[in-house]
Length: 223
Ligand SMILES: Cc1cc2nc3c(=O)[nH]c(=O)nc-3n(C[C@H](O)[C@H](O)[C@H](O)COP(=O)(O)O)c2cc1C
Image (cartoon, rainbow, N blue to C red; front, top):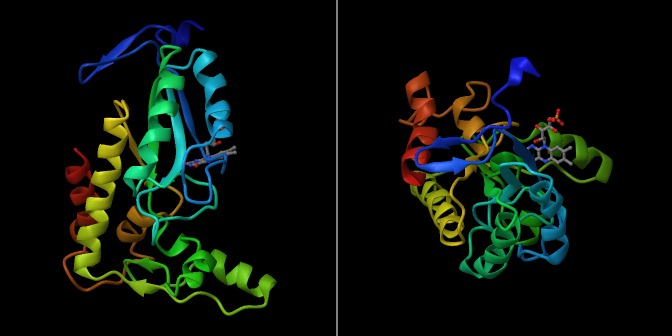
């Protein structure tokens, strides 16, 4: 334990005090209502981590809007003010044990739930109209054609960036002192960064600086 002697000591980052250095990794238990609102079960999923002593309890993969961002049934819908009442309860229940609550803001992009989108007459969107390999796999099993993906227009890019900021604002209103942006697992930020996916020829594609633009604008909007 000598190697990790600071694990149980507090730390202050940007004026926020964390009681130790233990953060629960984001996990999505898929326990929100079909509309994306907090349930009792969702609160009961996260409570033991707070009670157990972690400094930060991170709510997993949560959609920044309910049209194109959603990639799981049962995830939180942070794109609508109606989420706030339940979010207040969730934050209170985690924070009453002295833990801080955080959340992973996400947009699935080409990994969004294609069948859910199809039921609304929509297609997944991404930096580039590149179908998702996972959807190609599942479409074979389900005997359907893989979902086409639409390239995001500049107005949609701007709106999506604002969606991340608005979602973070709703969390802040409910007492969250931090949020996390889901940049892993090939989600939308990765779909802009990756030269494998991003084939755009405008200011959001091409060289590294252009491919990083979406992520930088998104971080600036959330800050
Ligand atoms: C049930 C479950 C749900 C998960 N959900 C998410 C998620 O919503 N977002 C995410 O970024 N990672 C998710 N992960 C990955 C974890 O955050 C973590 O990176 C992974 O489990 C590796 O850490 P570990 O070795 O401590 O388990 C999930 C993992 C599990 C087991």
